[in-house]
Structure formats: structure tokens, C-alpha cells
Length: 119
Image (cartoon, rainbow, N blue to C red):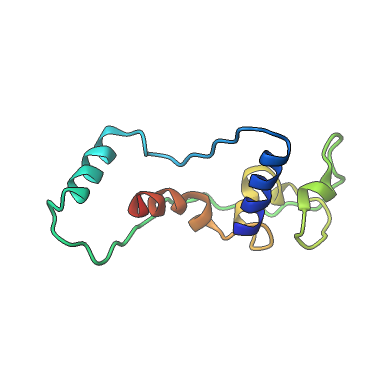
């Protein structure tokens, strides 16, 4: 989210670090060609852009809560999210599908298409 992004920038400045963030596809040649055509007004004035993300996801199995794995600082990982017992479905990649931690697939994968439309 924006608040956490700003906190990351503050931390990078405080500790004199360089941070790079990227999104997928900006380096693809076909994207540069499309971007240049849009910027040259080849398509005329653009008033509306729709992005679509229709990636099919496999069903996620229901897993029981379990002890937090060794080496995982779970309270730190949860951050401001509501406290809950450790569950593998709420960790690693699948955390994207829970509103407590994410905005779903639109912020997981859809952001890449939105970025291209904004660019």
C-alpha cells in the first residue's frame, strides 16, 4: 500500500540504500512499440483504457493451522494484519488471496497490466 511504500522510501533514505522496484513487461520490445505508438498519437486521443487479467488459478486446499516454522518471525511477517495462528495458506505465495494481507489478484498480477496502461 502507499503508506508502506512511503515507509520503505524513508528507510532507504535513512540507511543510505538504493532500492529498485520493477513490474513485468516494461522491457518487452512489443510494449515499447505500443507505448511509442500511443505517445506519437498514432491512435488519436485516448480517453479510456481497460486492462484485463484472466489468469486461471488452481483451487487452494484447506490446510489446518500449524506451529510457526523455525526461523520465521511471524509477528514481524504479519505486520499490521490481524493476529492469527500460522497457516501455510496464509504464507509464501498464497498470502495474496487473503484480504487481511493483500488486495487479491489485482494487486498480485493485475498491477502489471495497470502499470503498462499508466506508462
